[in-house]
Length: 443
Image (cartoon, rainbow, N blue to C red):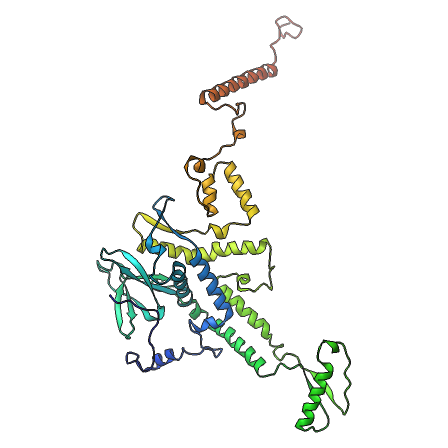
């Protein structure tokens, strides 16, 4: 069984690489977009906003605990494959690489290495640009019909099925592969890269000068250098702040403003950061863009929780949980990320919430310690749930602990209530008139 690596030997000298326009274009980095910049999955990382968005999602998702539970319960079980999926990469490094592949290429692939008993014991990441996914007619060996054509180190494509490769697609539209966010937003990312290159060229060319010294006389190179040196000597440094310049011989100074001001150069660069934030579903403040929002307080806390609820969990975490459950675990197990640490608020808010849930009997001490990633107390003390005494029925003795006493108190309360109702009925019912009285209608 051959193991597919992460790196492909792609060069013009490789006889397995055909010398066609498509292959040469791929070797040179792809075709430039309308902004004149080539955008690929790797070159997109040159844009700081893209790098930050990919790093935030990949690092946070890989750092979250991925637990295994017995089906239908919350009883945690240990699966060695999820604890140590690769012989060289750590658990965090492996899953971070998987998420980076999904974020850039829209797909992540991992080769399943099985032991003699047929159990998956290792997962080896495969670079997505080495894989082509296709469908064939379903067979008993390949019920889904999905086929992976993977190029090995010699440039030869080999056929693999879902039994040998785990595929984690991102958002797509054909049910086979995911769509690359970088390719989908190539023009926007290219515009950001082009703006960055334009800014670098602007500053590197020396066009960002403070002003121009003009003279009516023709100056030699030495005279011009001397005039410039005299000007800098008189009006540079903090000692000359607010000073007045005196020019003679018809010399004048014209300040130079930024040439890109009218085209809103800086605003366009900031807009591309917003576009990247929108494409990857990362709040702008996580991309270090806080111009339009406060940099502290509960507002950012709510945005961070919204990021986990609406983007991180449904877009990236839930598909991974279900794919791992479907392909790597037994039918009596399921995988679940522990995201409570990301959703919980500050210590004061957590204390208030835990107190309310503990007082109503909804949480035990071990439930609270589990949410705080603490070791359980165990035993009856850890699993004990409390019931408030003041929630007892009206008229009962809160200190009563036995069921008969409670029933007796309830019966006594009912009897007293019946007597009160009878007395009220007698007070509201008038007495009948006596016979032969003044009001007797017979008289």
